[in-house]
Every structure is written in C-alpha cells, then in structure tokens.
Length: 161
Length: 211
Image (cartoon, rainbow over the protein chains, first blue to last red):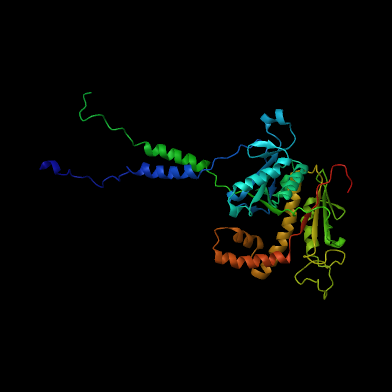
C-alpha cells in the first residue's frame, strides 16, 4: 500500500488560505449593503456655514431635508442665479414646502410622525428672505422642530466670503 | 491537448486580492456620517388676532441684523465677536432686588436694575433683514446658543461637576443605557430650567423698511 504512504514533510505545513476569499467577500458584501448611496443629487450650491454649538442629528429616518442655494452651473441657464429651494430631486417654490412636509410625514411610520426634524441645508450665501418664508411654511404645517445643518467649525469663518 | 486529467484548474490565487481591492474601495467610500447643526424650535403658528403677552422692555434683548451683516444690539452697533459676551451679561444679570420673589440665587451678573430681572424672564429677540446672508445669521444664532450653553455649562459644573453640553449629548445619544438616561434627564431638565432658552424670532422685515 505504498499509495497511501505520506511523503516526508519538510517543516511546517503551509496555512490553508483557500477560505480567505470567502471571508473577504463576506466583508465586502457587508460594506456594499451598508453603503448608502446619495438618494438625491443636489442641484444647488450647498456650502454649509460653520457653527461650533452644534448637536448631532441622529437617526436619519426621522429627518426631512430641504436644500436651499443657488442653482449649480448647469441649471443656472434655466433657473437663474437666485437662491432656490430643492425638495427631493426637483426645484420647488416656497408654497410647495408645506405640501412636501405633509407628504413626507405621511410616508413615515406612525410612531415617528411626531418626532420628525426638518433639516435645513442652506448655502451660506443664501438670503434670509427665503429661509424666513420656509420657516413660515413650516409653522403652518406644524413642523416646528428644525435643524440648521452646519459644518463643525468656527462660526466667525462665515463672515468672510 | 497533450495534457492528461481534463482541463487545468483556474488559478484562484488572485481572487483574494481582487476582493481586497473591492473591499478597500467600499471601505473608503462609505461615509457613516451624521449631520450636525443647530437645533431650534419654531413658535407654533397662531392667528394674528391673538394679543402677544406683554413683556417688559428691560427683559428684552434685541438683536437686529441688517443686510450688510452689521449688528444692532440693544440699539448699539456691535461687533459680532462681542455678541456672546453681551448676551451672557444680559441673561446672567438678575436685576430684581434681593428678597423679591423674582430674585435668582445663582446669577453672577451685574445686578443692573435696567437690565433683565432674571434668566427666566429674559428674552432674546432676533430680527433680521430679508437680505441678510444666511452665514451671518447662523453666526449670530451660534453665538446666542453659545451664550446659553456657556451659562448652562457653568451651572452644570457647579451642581454636577460636568458640562451641560456633554450631559445633553449623552442624554440624546440612543446608545446610552436607559438607566443613565433617566438620571440625566432630570439633571438636563433642571439646568434647562435655570436658563430657559427664550429666543424669539420676528419675521424678517422687508428690505428698505425702517425698524
């Protein structure tokens, strides 16, 4: 039965790495699934101001986003250079904000509908006029909890252009 | 084929490398970011017929921002860098005479009778022009919130030897165990009551109007 005779081994046997690709693939799939791709392309300039006294905006499912800013270069021809409101994927006027909030709110589960925050992502060069109008609309639909989303940093940086 | 034993095995040795490459790509592009910002509550919408509560002039700290980003604080042109100091002085003033029911025991301010009675009565009124830049507005908001936070931190340090902002962050963090949160809730509430945030925002004035 010389067929079953083992050869003489020299030193340690090499570690079996056959399962290594599988392990890596599992990790890969994990990251592929948790990666959240941006859900809406931002069509407005959106350089947020800095602030130091910030609070974290936990739990993304409880947040409704409103973007405000100058339309980006490619949209400037159509929409001009005045600050615009962007809801989801399209430009909107102030009067549509209320409906948008109500619609977004209706889509959330019942238990979250009362704890929603509206995150205002506003370009630092936008005018306050449009913000005031938005706030007025938000008050009308009783979406009172707002968050001025900012970058972490020294607030005095906002004053320089 | 001259070879025996069927087709040769595909060399899968580089599979791990390819997977690694993909893995690193996703690792780098994944941003588990959380947005941060200034939390504010808007006042509820009420019919304009309702008469607003009467507040004494001395309990109101007016901040006016014009379209050029200049500040008028209590009718005085002020640099934005001095705003926090002024707001703290106003909130922490305690102008009520000692012995009166409005006297507050924890204020360390100037006890100026012409300024706010106590932190509970002190209201900051913020007014901005429609043409004010958002960046300037956020800076002002940041300074006013900062003034409140500074005072709250001071009281929290005195009572609990811990920063208020720190306690609040722990309280709001969903990963904090609920037993700790219950304990923090009380403390956070207490400090908030010592210096309640009363920041009123008037609707923006149209450009050109005098106010």
